[in-house]
Length: 399
Image 1 (cartoon, rainbow, N blue to C red):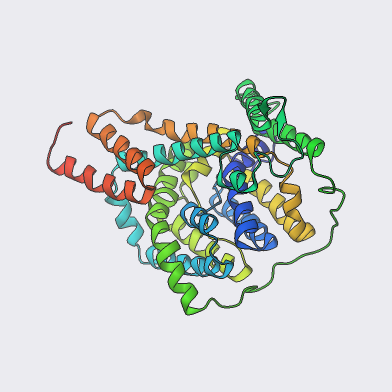
Image 2: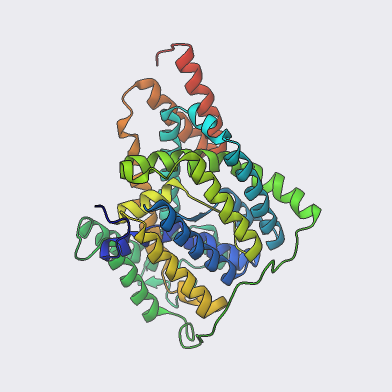
């Protein structure tokens, strides 16, 4: 009999694999948009645990990238972000409960799925490189490669480059080591670096208490907030969610876990995100999804059961309940360059799923989606790739 949940070093390591995506976007929305730390961490933890218990295999939990990236870049209000979570909840519920998502899944060729995965993987790797070199929007705005540490250079060499090289060597050296899992060692080393070089008072000022997220902390969003949220945040996000967080995620889960992932269907994944975003709206969280890149990250670093979800979920839940707003200080101990290393290897894992593409026409679609994504965004890449794939198939056109 297969044990659905394991709680060992490899599951612990795998549970940490997606922090490179999760933490920078969450921190950005906390600092720029004024979203509640308690609300974000509590809903992330709850979503991780519920998904692990239901699906029984590793299931990623990530901020919706189009929404979070735009929100951080433009500084939209926390109320508008809350409104986008409510709208996403309603839209995904309708798509899921009506069965529309199954019909959508049937018309999306495998080459389009692989193009989405390669594009997402490439974007993750690019963001990882930015975090290591100090070129992410958060670092540029702060004017420092490591804004939460009291050191910026080792001699003439930027500190992020040094930590990035160290992190890469740790991952490469421990890639398949089950005694000392790579992500676990990397996060441990990163935490030690953070403790050594943390700004004065980061840890000593921490105080424990009991903090529950507020119900509707921002109140009901206004009609103006909902209009802005729909056109500016939700519409650009929806194609990316369908392509990457539903179709590509379910496809990748079947590839990794075969029959163990029988619950990870297009419908259940859609309704899972609808439920999560409804809770995020009520408790002051941010829009969340099941991105395929997060699944690749968890798998790459050792996650094989829903136990990994429960481990990382408990970490976030306990941080929210006992530290509240101060949980941010604890998270900021991890150098951004260390998170960048996680992103690079997770992105590489996701991008390599294209290795099963054998036909030139399929690879053309994959490369086309990547090119459009890099020039514009993943939503446009998905749309153009889908049309191109069907034209090539029905027209019997050879590339």
